[in-house]
Image 1 (cartoon, rainbow, N blue to C red):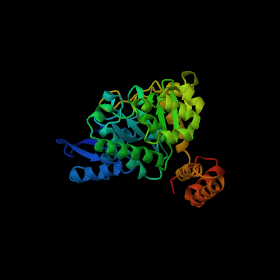
Image 2 (image 1 turned 30 degrees about the horizontal axis):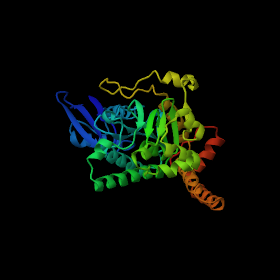
Image 3 (image 1 turned 60 degrees about the vertical axis):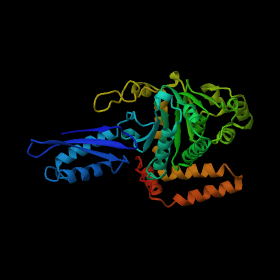
Image 4 (image 1 turned 120 degrees about the vertical axis):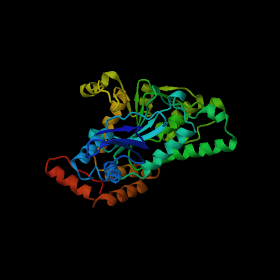
Length: 373
């Protein structure tokens, strides 16, 4: 019996080899799934039982072994990005249960946002928008060394008609707005340069974690344009009007230390700041079942982002969403209205089962088990 996962991400191929009860036959079943967590094992059980109804009982020990094997592989710590996908979404497991990884991976064009990447990005974000409430946090990362995202793909732009470019811009603006509007907390892990729409993508996240190689710039004015996916507005709200004007009008680059100083980065990761347990974890690699190296866990920024994501995800998911909503809506209005928004958010969760669980766990001196109910 063998099982492995190909191209993990928004669309997953799962191949299962099963030896029949007679021991003479081995077959492979390939299944494409549009979702990964929770229902994965059950779908595999159903599919295998339907295909091999004579050789495999869905409740048998053999099927339990298949389910366990697939579950362990599915929830690898940092899955290998599928080479044919420019944007992909993967749930993590084990200690990172409840965290989703949104990966940008277009190395041949240094992660510039082409039509395929944008289409897949929108699919990932639409999937997240409909995810269950148990999802605690989303980490947006790049798998291309030295770059987070340089913005639009100018090579593709040259071959677009004005009508096509207008549609592309509308879709990109919509995707970034969807990212900002996701109900669960989001973190951008940045260890490379982010330009134009790449900065706008990071600005749409709730938190930004950056390494020493992080650099930010808006070059649009030098191209006769302006940032048009929320850059002028989100940036000025985050770092203040004067600093935003300096950055966008001049097109100057901002390094990680300056970004931290002005509030563009929430956390700057430096090698000397690493904790010993994080340093030990970096020596490990994640490999796929064929033995090839997957995305290595030696990225300091990614480790810090996951550490913060775990801290966030350990709290009640309904509370996390209510907090995000209260801050986002309240910050856009005067204090008296903002306080009413906060009260409404509190009222929406004060009778939840998670609230009861939190109080009981505190009284019993144990970790709470939240279900998002």
